[in-house]
Image 1: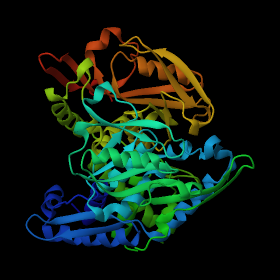
Image 2 (image 1 turned 90 degrees about the horizontal axis):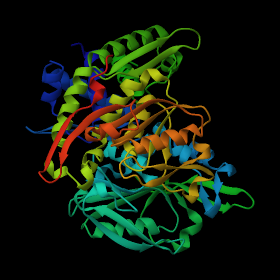
Image 3 (image 1 turned 60 degrees about the horizontal axis):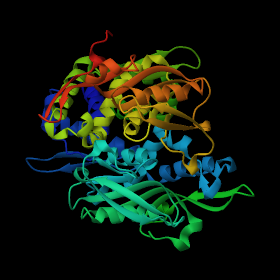
Image 4 (image 1 turned 60 degrees about the vertical axis):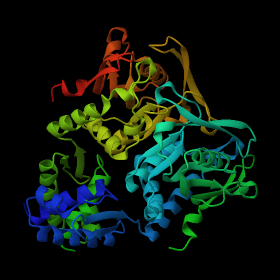
Length: 273
Length: 273
């Protein structure tokens, strides 16, 4: 097989298997090429991934070594992308009662959701995350997008136990903004004890839901290494019960009556590299 | 930029943008190359995609023409993949009361879900689908996977209306197996009138849920061009209210007491090309 063909095959394979150690012999066998040729191919792929701002190939030396594609999306491109998402979101027609924002159309777009996942994965790639935890329903697509770039499973906390899940652990928690008592449920066999996880959700106001997830995860001795929310409502900052999180978007000055809303970049872009 | 670099960039772009018409000038400008060079690149990419059993590039002639990546996963590879999924699923420990099967671990794996999406997209790619419709919660990840390959939005039917959704259309329907009356809700602005859609879900017993979705979609004058379920319970065949569907997996002879279960390939593999 020619180099040009191998480069296409390798690029596709690597993009589909991020954060996974792939051995040189695997590629050598798949494409019937010498390991030295594969090694050169990988150098070309690595350079181009970096040029395109998509991340890099990490080399792992030794007998059980190989390469691992680490998705690291370019900061400038990320900022441009989120800026354009902010412009789409600040349409006053999106305002719903309770200070919520209609985002279902945007969260229904697979390419948008994948890009959001790419950004959180960029931030969390170095944390050795073992699972992405989210709560039904709206956080699910973003959680899968993040998980697909981190190559780890998704664990879904539910509001209601389902017969198809087997035995569960549940907690009651107080919703941050409405002060209502709510329930959260997680199937016992869905998460191993002591796992290192990140929590992903679409929207955070006071943070009661995420605080509830954290309490539930304590029952599994899980370590929460990161928290990512697509949008945070900045007006709720004073009442916030969750402080250590990453947001892509900040929504503030929501005034349903005068149809006013400010949508800005989140704290994702404030942190140092 | 060298051909080898362009091939990597083009492959990545095409994989991330399936079913989307991409003009030659777009690539020519992005990679600062002559259109004739890009045209040759695309021929190489097309041949390799076909070799790898991943689909092909469709050429669209004319001034507004270009290429479109049509994901068509190889039949033999699909069959091998689903066979291995069947073997994982027929573990008697997965049996839950009510004849359900524990699949949350498998549906939590992004790579598995993406492959399932790839297979349904292969079947539905020629139908000009405009949206993928699913019902919360378990069908959501599969629906996004299908939608990402078809490059269309996902629309999520809910069991309960949410304040963050705006005005909704709802219907009551009778669950096929439990004969209980249930409710389904779809936000008005989530789907355009007259759209051509496919319905995706994880599990089908008698088909009451999917029949409910179909009724709800009638309120939007939507045309249901395809129905895809990951697993169907074959024992419920006699009571089935939905007949025109594609399944990847068939579950039969479920006997919770004797811990017995048969998991076989679904009707996906029975149909002609």
